[in-house]
Length: 74
Ligand code: FES
Image (cartoon, rainbow, N blue to C red; front, side, top):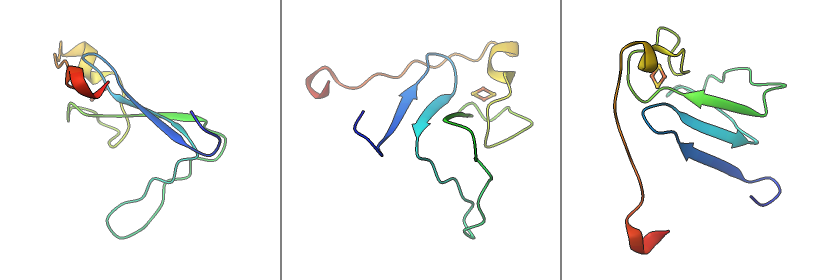
């Protein structure tokens, strides 16, 4: 990852792990305070009680989702 860049990792059966200099805001531009957090996990299952963050509900509910880029884009 280049300096100042952001890396997003799609975790198998889990959240989106986001690392780097992150600004997270809602549609009105209000920002979450991510100071001191070099990485966050964003829910992609929709079951978290702490959206947009993952709270582990995906695992407790046995949520399954695999995602991988097409072979020719890796
Ligand atoms: S991905 Fe973890 S609670 Fe949704």
